[in-house]
Length: 503
Image (cartoon, rainbow, N blue to C red; front, side, top):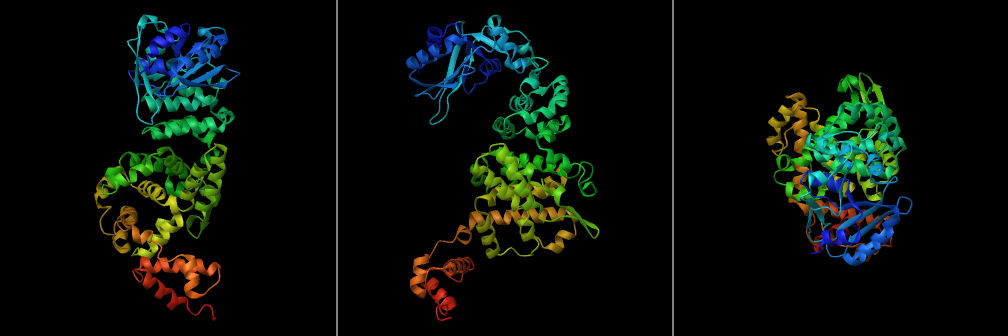
């Protein structure tokens, strides 16, 4: 293990540990990297010299602001060297966002550094045994840390960089801190400025916020300050839509209720799906993606709302919503894969409800469901769980949750207990689909007994779309048990399609 303390004291003695690494040290927790600040004319030389000694890769991140990054090859430890923003350290710290991030500690002062490494993982670091009297703190950041409160470092920090408004909520969620009343008041004033921030920076902050188990409580605050709807104006249109159905707050209230349920589900898969939670765990690692899908799943309801008879309907809101969500996610620089998955979930989130309109969920119906949805199927089932359970109280959910894995109740039985019964039946449909997927995989993804070339040879047919239709019919026959092996597959296609050539 490298002697990092000695290396830093030797090669960058005029630098200061700043920001998160100092904050986390005072909170007695590790950080993902080390941030150092030093005079601008020293950054490049110090970075290259330090990289050579630490056997680290070094590259310039930002020429304008004087930022270099080092990554050690053995430990995968990240060290960022940044020029003072201002003429000296004091000006640099006073320009920072929150008091808890405006802290510094001299590199040449006494301390220990603990490095935690894991195979294939980025190293974690923790500064230990800092001397309080040597801590540089111009705005009372240490006191605010002790009070677990986030305060602005100056009156104009949000206007200078509007993404800091999102960062305030992200810090509150990650650190389990509260936002001071003055911060909330300022965010309420400055919320419209958030659209000036770059989409990729907004994405990064939302991703980190949504990855925590405290995203719901923070997006409620974001909504109260106007920041959420400033960021997603289409959510504002939900507020007055369908209040006759959802109550005060309309579709927006429903969206936030769904978000709450999704967050609970992602943290409690073992309670919702005790038999399958271990198999689902790898699928839900990106919790932020699931929460974004829930936030946008009914985005098109205001645009599609229409009164038909005595009912308010939202025809094709799921398909329209996927189109609208795609534009939003593009603006936030989501990857094509994540965009496709989220929009796939939104576009098909009524499919389980359609299945639930039948008293029996057949193997054929389940096969077509998973075939059509592909990778979006399981994530979408979790979105639907949040959607369905948002209509009942916590007490009702606790009461029916143990029954959600029971045999699918009939539609008539569900009607006898009104909304709770309907919700329970929908939950049982989801459990049944998980059961079919995990316990009977051959019926969900039947192995291919014949390929297209073999079908053409057996039936003496040329290449055409018909071959795909035959293969699909063969897969359905496998699912229903009519075909079990290659011989029966050949017999099936001869019997069903043998006359195609002559026809």
